[in-house]
Image 1 (tube, one colour):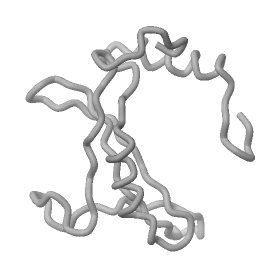
Image 2 (cartoon, one colour):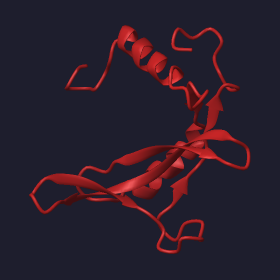
Image 3 (cartoon, helix red, strand yellow):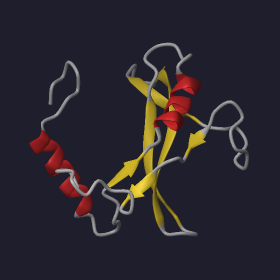
Image 4 (cartoon, one colour):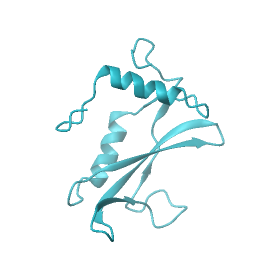
Length: 121
């Protein structure tokens, strides 16, 4: 991996995606993310100081048994040992759909939303 721009080779990408497919507890290979929705998530956290980041969690919606990619904004902080950490920006009300901090679920798993010609699929 290039440390300056975080790019990886196709061979590495094939290996990593194969590892995900070989996980017996899921059939998801990737997630299709609409750019407009991703930009919305980025807009919500772009005003953060420091080095704004997002975190992605993997989950399964039990009502449909569908794999989900759940994205939250983070805020740079320092832990007790003086290390930089990124804290999840979560809503204060557990049952609210965002109150300034949102949890984004806008992805569609592959399959079914796969590119049948991709070397990574």
